[in-house]
Amino acid sequence: MSKKFYNGEDFWEEKELPASDEIVKKAELKLGIKLPEEYIELLKESNGGTIHFTNVFINPYGECEIPYLLGIDLENTNEDENDGIFSFVEDIKEYSLPENIVLLAWEVYPHSCFALDYTNCTENPAVVYFYENYPEDNGPYSKTIVAPTFKEFLSLLYQH
Image (cartoon, rainbow, N blue to C red; front, side):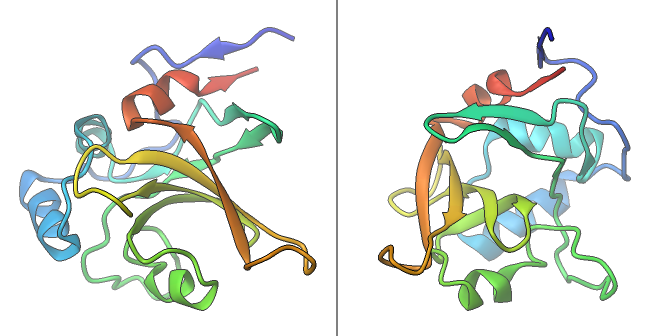
């Protein structure tokens, strides 16, 4: 089975309304960080949604799936759906994930997720994968770096 890697085209499978510069700036101020430029560019096409390139290989776990990319939901006003980066603030606390992350997507809720890791920075975050530990492991989640930048993360995404 051949893989087609993301090359800057045809990212979104289902699009939402685009995010405006104003929404992006408000989100960055609210979070106290700078979102990656490549993420902002995608949000200006569609403020989140399902994507075509849903697979990424992560050592040592193998092929993982990122079925969608979260957009910006400043007010988290849609109570029926969790569809933005602010929708999961309580989940981040409840599941003891680090506070300084921006969730990109759950692979399997609440067992594994992808996030921008702002633990040691306010811009140019790494993309990380959090996965639930088994009871004998220390802590509720472990993390591994998927890519040092969001731009590099995008180049790792593929479809079959």
